[in-house]
Length: 346
Image (cartoon, rainbow, N blue to C red; front, side, top):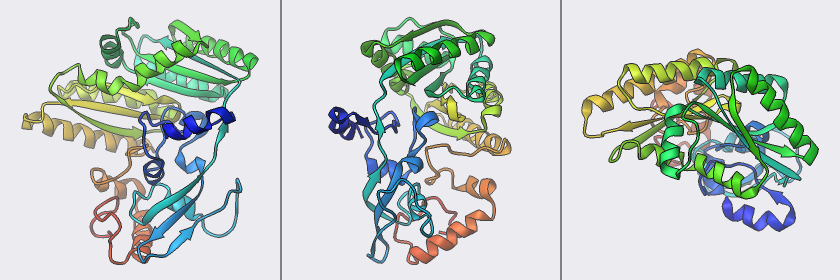
């Protein structure tokens, strides 16, 4: 991913999907990855035009062309994007690129509570402000980032933002956000267009995982993610914080708040069986909560093996259709067996 953007730099183009790691484009396609820019540019499903795939029987297919849209037959591209290797092996990808914006501004704003920060996100989306990134850090994450990156950010819930557009458009966006944030008690709002300062801010966000690990040396971080409608985000994050405290767990939360997706990273002593059991209870509870809010048990981590039991709870009879597709395309179950589908359908 990073190599592609380095290659594109002198052409005035970039590939916007940023999962926070130098992931492979094939892996990003197979897992339907997204990340910090998804609120404006979408996820991999919105940025892959076509794929070449080797099917279970050895047949090589192409699912589309370079045209930006098509109504020719079934949308096999979308079927393969996010299939986690269970239907075929992706060998070539045709990606949609974006123009590098004329101006970019990054900003941060602190809030008295997670709920206030999330309500600001809801206001931003309802207003139609074309924010490129809007990331949520709870107070525990901000404290961890301060210690890890030697920063002095206010240790309260925070939103990190980025605005893309023309010079005038970016100024207007930052001013509009400041007004929306002020209505929800936002303080210490700061914006910058300087590349060095922008990179420093986003590096702190991307280093959040390592910063959280440092909160409890020797622990293991077990990350889980869910995604809920924006209108339920404040409630979901608030209840997740409360549930972790009730169970005696350290579970800092970060989120791609602009699309309702958030991650709880449980910091665990894996030798403590009781603590691991409480963590499993929390993850199960969180999955159930998201589904009950008409959300999903995974916004971007994928089903894999760990969340297979929740797929039927979320999608019901639709999982049977997935099983039929899997059986038709891979009757011998040789393509990444044991992933996504319940054992009865795999």
